[in-house]
Image (cartoon, rainbow, N blue to C red; front, side, top):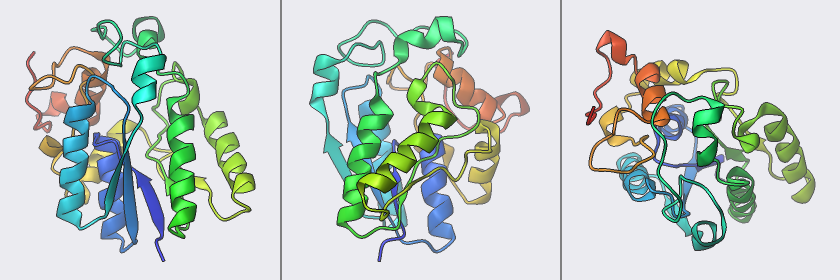
Length: 219
């Protein structure tokens, strides 16, 4: 019996979640998605590495149609990722239409197929409302829909729903996450750029201002 399928991007939040569950003795599998984002290659290599380290079976699902059909600066087919703070007017171009809905649907089907108890996503209280499929009301409704669509077998769970990104950063240190082996920057360069909204959030989460952030930034 598998306890949970973890949606694992390779970012800090999902890597903390995976490590947290494993440390608590939960039996997990991980699923990641290659959907054509500019930082997908960097993220997926981190996701694969943490799964190898934890001995977790890891599946990567190819979703090329997202990059081909959808419009977003986050995608390789889109424009430049904006620099600056994580505010709606600045970052709304990075919305990938219904991305979480698509990925969670696949994760739910996978979870039912391997007889898992549910799907875990590291969505948190600091998730930004510029992303409609990250909002609490979406999460609750989608979890209910998945339960209906699987005959009550699967629910989508959000263990960090009441935590913000800094809380998750602190938890990750307690469960032994090496943050140099996680990826956040939307631009997907050799190093984190240090100036996009995602990097700004990472600095806050990892207490960069207190000297606790091990990330190498270009700026």
